[in-house]
Length: 371
Image (cartoon, rainbow, N blue to C red; front, side):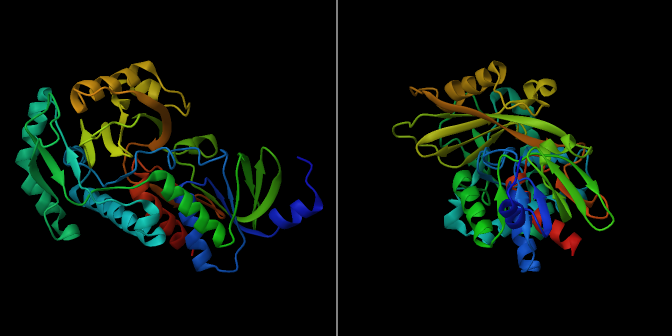
């Protein structure tokens, strides 16, 4: 790109911090950097015209993990590791609420429900047996019981007669959240340049040369927050994970309210604007869903529709309005990667599908590490 003197001088000179990725982690990092270093010149680069990964494409769950997810995590993580991760998620959600406020988030504390299909009777019984043990394990964080039993008051078909209810779960409006976070970032004097891909970087003794698809420039520090796309820039122990979603057209007299999980969190749905938003199904095809491609597939979309029409709303005339995908970053461990990669390059990636909960906390931890 043939930049003018004015463009080079105003936007690309004397950059103190460059952040790659304008999702929750990237913008939270920018906000905390500006609070810590008020005079710093901060630049955020985003390859999409909107955040490209999952920050504007998620289901809007203010959650930290269903009971079955926690039990599954305990098979591969220690109790202390699971508690630490859960606390990071809880703290991250609280931090996000403090940064933006509940009104800007569209925060609605309706609670969350985990339901189990009839064929998952064994998993349901295991969860029932472990409710009190997990509540006791979580008591240092919440000082109250998290999980309890509730009846099938939403009249789902083909499920166990009870749900497991989480009183601390809530909904947010993903679009409002990210719009508010972008506005807050810009109001602090932080520049966001969209449709700009960082192709590579080269570290100098006192700075980093950043090369994009349009231009190159020097930055004192570089922070990478690209989650599922990270390996395209820096190889890390994570993989992309595509999440597919659909949303219905408005449904008359919709009686469902809350956030809902199924099958160890691999399926999830909620109400929004008299519609049902439903996502998941990655476990049907792990190999093909380990991708950064943004297309939907008939295999997973057909299963989502099947659940919608046979379990969630079996007696309703339903029309699908939209379908989309988001790209998460997952790995062998669910803990995020927060580290200094080199002298002037830092990472905050691998949200494990919990970017809404972890994003603000990870952003703060990156800044604390740099400071």
